[in-house]
View 1 (cartoon, one colour):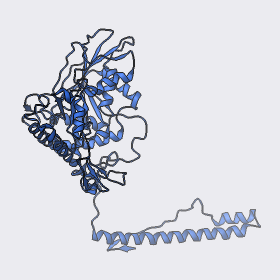
View 2 (cartoon, one colour; view 1 turned 45 degrees about the horizontal axis):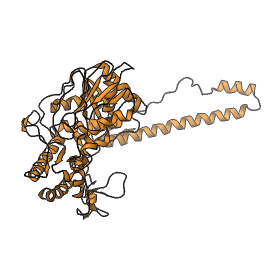
View 3 (tube, rainbow, N blue to C red; view 1 turned 180 degrees about the vertical axis):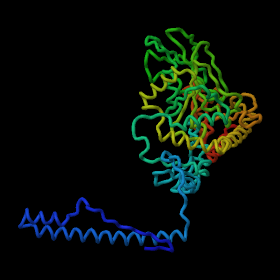
View 4 (cartoon, rainbow, N blue to C red; view 1 turned 30 degrees about the vertical axis):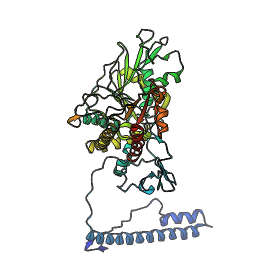
Length: 492
């Protein structure tokens, strides 16, 4: 049979004897041995033989027709040559770029999040689609550090989405994905804020979990020793809470004015954020002989000039978090660079006990995709945040200038930033405000009366209720509303 000018020939040959074919001699034997059923068996065998020949004819027709169709198709569209097998993309497949309507569905005054049927309105906005603005009767929430600063950026960059197949990593074993360490090292090489060569990577479900595990990992192996946990005032309040939650003689909080001395039976673990939360100042170890956890959550170019790569000694460690780099706080991903293998192993063992290995596979996949976008754009999310943080601090400094009632924190001097290749001023994540009049204490309540809720200086940071912290990682419109509430208070 032919198709499209080419000829396909099907040759059918007959073997001397097929396994299921009955010869006439066999039929004769069958008649002799089974005289009552022999004739019927002969007839059945002939039917089988006829069906076999019919099947062969039908097969010949199908092959001919297929060849004709293939030939006609080949004339319309060339058949591509075989290609090499491509690397597997089962872990994360990029969604096709599409417009993100999370905000536009709510008039850009709220967000329609996945899984919700109603808009979640931004602060001071009301209504089914968040169309009503009522700043007079609302109290701005500036207490938390929720990083909505990047929300608009990611709405404008939906290409960073990932899809994870449900067949990926069903078991309990959670290990760092091979690409994770690669992309983290590329990140720090781009920014210049940490040494990663000859360091052990430890991952966890956010930096908060790493701080908890560090208290254990930096502590002694001696079961009879008591670890003294200390931080310089003002400090991030969670540093104080971890030892209290442990409620153990093995781990004790000794901060709030104390200046502990390390001893063999009572070593000191020093917790310090650099830049510091709440005041944004760079810090270094203060207790000689202590082991330090350096919290680098805010050591990124949008908060402070990058002047050096953090390279703590063997007895110390440095941690980072995705939340203050790209805004993905709910992804829960943090990482540490540790020089000492024994310490890294202790951290991993702690993570294995409390979270079966640290960060989930889903969190790792999302982190890889987000950071790959950051690297490919040469710091797109960093530049976006740096521009807004600088503008916010310029506006705050203008409002606070000349006030005899309130005072902003002092800043580290401008410095050459290795990422931006220029001299830059710090632009911390928080405003650390001091009330200068005793009648305004606690300073937090004075802010609440003005329609702004901040975090108290004593309960949140071990300082004094003369201070209050206001977070600056909010959305643009929320910052504008807060600034408008501050102006009449500072003019009073």
